[in-house]
Length: 249
Ligand SMILES: CC(C)(COP(=O)(O)OP(=O)(O)OC[C@H]1O[C@@H](n2cnc3c(N)ncnc32)[C@H](O)[C@@H]1OP(=O)(O)O)[C@@H](O)C(=O)NCCC(=O)NCCS
Image 1 (cartoon, rainbow, N blue to C red):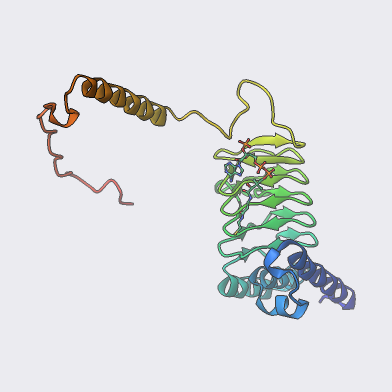
Image 2 (cartoon, rainbow, N blue to C red):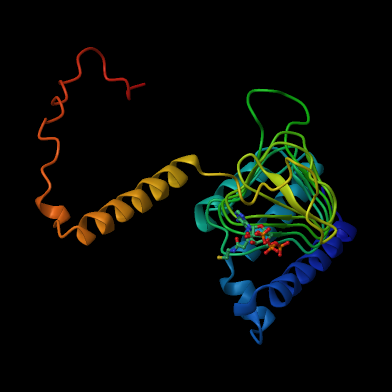
């Protein structure tokens, strides 16, 4: 069973977690520690995990999973009791966060709602991400597989990250790619992942400007474009789908 030493360690970690909320949540500025402890779901989830993890490490059966399940019920944040979490983790809002069994999180990490530190399939062993110190992961980001997110990295909201992330970089998109490393844009012909070409939008813009030019040319000749006869042929109506529903299953 955990002794006084581990109780003191857990208490110290809890204080640091509350402090993390005060420092990193603009809505928590000027809010007292007891109010944060009573209300912030991210703090509740981390607190519950500290206890569940200590019991898990002490090989107490059942109870760690029960605590994790109860915490998920109350906060919407799911943290496996085996996950290793450093000091000062702050989960802002929190709903929908999932932290898998073999995930490792360093110190002073910030996660927003909907972040997944998950596996890619049915692999066993180390299969969840390792997140180093001072990383920020935006809402809805999915980090999958045993990747390493280097210290100080920022992951953009809704990114899907399946490769290692360099330290002090910003990664965005699906699949996630670095758009800043040490504050600088990566160079190279294939580096601008924040501004990928959109051929459909380009084609629509091209057609729209051509139609505009044609309408202006008609107007100059005194023709109202609305009176020009169009192609009256109607498209074939869609047939009802037969066979099994392709959306099923
Ligand atoms: C990624 C993030 C942390 C900003 O990091 P940063 O290092 O300061 O990066 P910048 O703001 O300079 O953005 C770098 C580039 O990535 C783009 N970018 C930023 N976030 C992006 C995202 N989520 N998806 C796609 N592109 C994004 C920016 O437009 C910018 O493009 P540019 O090269 O044209 O300038 C921030 O945009 C983000 O997503 N934060 C998450 C916040 C969040 O989840 N809040 C929830 C509160 S409830």
